[in-house]
Each structure stands twice: as C-alpha cells, then as structure tokens.
Amino acid sequence: MTNSPLLHAPSRREFLEAGAAVGLAAMAAPRRVLGANDRVRVAVCGVHGRGFDHIRNYAHVPGVEIAAICDVDDNVTRRRVADMEKMGLPRPQTYVDVRKLLEDHSIDAVSVATPNHWHSLIGIWVCQAGKDLYVEKPMSHYAWEGRQLLAAVKKYNRICQHGSQSRSMPPILEGVAQMRKGLIGDVYMARGLCYKWRPTIGRAPVAPVPPGVDYDLWTGPAPKHPFTANRFHYNWHWFWDTGNGDLGNQGIHELDIARWGLGVRYPTKATAVGAKVLFEDDQETPNLLSCTYEFDGPGDKKRILEFEVRGWITNHEAEIGTGAYHGEGVPLVGKATAAAEHPRRRQWTWQNTPMHASANGPVNGPGTIGNIFYGSQGYLGMDGYSGYRSWLGPGADPGPGASGGNELLHFQNFIDCVRSRRAEDIHAPIEEGYLSVLLVHLANASYLTGRTIHYDAASERAIGDEEANRLLHGHYRAPYTVPDEV
Image (cartoon, rainbow, N blue to C red):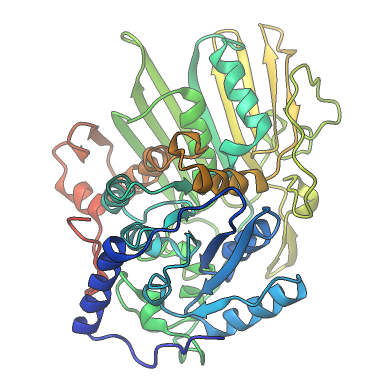
C-alpha cells in the first residue's frame, strides 16, 4: 500500500503541527524492544543515488526488513519499488514527506541519504521520534546544525552511525592501528587526496518542475530557486545552498581518515585557497581547492593536515589510484580480515570508476582518492578504503600492507548496535563525524572569506571573524528551520 503524496506545500501552521507531532512521537511512541530474532524495520530516506546503495546493503544484512522508502520524486520512488521487487524484496511502504514516515511506530531505524542540506534536520526529527539513525556524510550542511544533531542523538539516547564506511574497513583499521603502534614513528602530517575526474555540468535553463516532484519539499531549508536540472539530482553538490563541493562529497571520506590517522580533534587554524578552473558552467563550488589545517599535538608539537581537491587530469601520488593497493605486488606483512562475500563488494580501482560524458566524448576517471601519512620513520598510504601500504626508513623499504574491504560491514555494524543498544560499539560515532565534517565547513569558510580561520574549540567559533561565524551557522528557509533547542 502506498501513501498519497502531498498535494500542496504545507502551511506554517501545518508544518509546526507536524513538527510538534514528531516531538510528541518521541515521548508517546511505544518503543519496540528488539529480541535476538526480531526483524529490524528500516526506512531509507532519499533513494535516488546513495540511498539505493543503502537498500542493496540492508538487503544483505540478516534480520533486516526494508519496511519503507521516502523520496520527494515519485518517479524515483516507482523505480526503486520496481527494483526491490526484482531483488525479491517485499514491497515497502512509500512516503513523500519524512514527517509522515516518522509517525509509523513500527519503524526502528531511518537511513538518511538525501541531499546534504536535509541531513541534520531530518536526523534531528528521527531522534525526536525515538528511532535510530544512519546519516550519510556529511552529517551537516553547516557546522552549527551538526552540533544540534549531535545534541539530539545524545538527548534521545539514539544509536547513530555516520556514513564514514572507511571506519568499518579491516585494512584501514589495521593501517591506523599500525600507526598507533609506531610503524612509521611520530606521525606529524597527513595529506588527503581527492582527485576525482569531474566533467563540466554545462548550463541548464530554468524549466518546469518535473511531474511527480515536490520541489518545495526537496528545497526544504535551502533558499528557493527556480528549478533547473543542474540544481536537482546529484549536481546539487556543486551549489552552496544545497551542497559542500567535492570537499564535502568525496573528500569527507578522506578527511575523516586523515584526521583519524593523525589522532587529532579540533584544529586551531584552517586555510583554503582555490578556484573554479577549466569550465564555464553553472557550478558554484571550486573544483580546485588546497586546504591546510593546524592542530595542537603532544607537548609543544604541531600536527598538520593538508588536503587537496582536484577535479581533472592528475598524477597518482604514492601509487594511490593505480590498483597497487589491491593485493598484486603488495607485501602483505599485515593481515586484514577478509570481508564477507557480497554482490556489492567494492574494490575501488580504476576498472569500476564510472565513465563520464564530456564535450570531447566519454572520460574514464581513474581517480586518486586516499591519504598519505608522514612519520619520523617512514610513510604510509591508504587508497580510499580498500587498502594500505607502507614504506620504511630512508630507503623507503616496503613495509606492512593489507587490502580488501566491504561497505556491507558498516551497515551490519549499525544493525548490530541497534539490537544491542551498545552505542560504544558503533564504528563511526556521530561525534567523530561532527569533528571531521567541521573541517569541511572551516575550509569552505576560509575559501569564501579569503582568509585563514582561527578556531576556538571551547566556544566552537571562529576567533574575531563574524563573517566566518555566519557561514558556519548557515541560514534556513522558514518553516524548515533547525531548532535552537532539540
């Protein structure tokens, strides 16, 4: 059975009543206590792109029922229902408005894979409704709302997994553990790489909203713009009102690994310079961005994190992106636990990088996506979340390495914790997601203001820079407003 879509944008009174209902649901909804054999009923919100990955992963987690899907585009919803039927999955309930979905007391957990500008607000509503949350990266579109989501997770005692699936990958876990044990000595710098081929998006004229799309609801907290194809599916990443550029898209995965491996939390300074190069099109965010962060280390030592976004032809640093991290020729002195067999096992090599169309024909994109860690006794590379390699001593002699990875492990970990209620077992806690995503917001604020951001962790504000603080706080279109009190 399919719920009817909204026939009109809600009035302010209707919205506030619905919001109040979500809050009341948290207090009044009977909480299901899951036994070892109970099915976990999951809803996926936003199923056009990444959300469909969620569906395919949950389909392979034992004891999970994909009970509902939610999308503002009826065309996408119909395709996903058909896809699920082909996969042999039960037909889910379908929703247009996530607030209606949250009224269903039988839903245990919600996976949020909407555009970035909806992540925190929906996440807060999910927590208020007494449901557990898997929220895609980045967990916030602005820094302030990320803090509000973090507060909601804590206040309502919810299980929350951030979509940093690298933290569930055995070779990445092993590589970080090796650095903690001193494999490359004193780790003083991390260099994150996001070199992913991105063709021009061209220019798209203003057009009628496609039939079946609730564009007001899609826009949600963001300023309302006339509809264009470039502001809609996927290309919303390249507009400031809805996305965070590739730094907050692909880059956040590597930023998270870089900060994690470096063993740091809040930066004291963030600087970013860049530009939009090569293409004359509708994109607003830079496709070339160089970021540097400074952290306080032990004693008087500093720790440096460099990060670079580059959207076109590039070299492969530390052999990242060449396939060298996938077992062939890798001295696997270390051993990563083999991932379970799974139809969607991801080995991020150039062979399965999508082909993109450009004015000159299709472009095959062998990206350079990963990290390099530098220490007093060597360096260590990580290729996405598929493997690590190390080189030791002045002669850069090959050291330990490992390969293999499966993002299914991240979804399995989430469901395991939903059952056990052991938040301490979550692989990517929302607190860690917040700290890593903060680096995205600080770099983008530095780029937009044209100056270094000096950051105070105690107040979580830029020091003496109100323009930067306004950018970190963000702005919201009523009535889709992130609450001051969650």
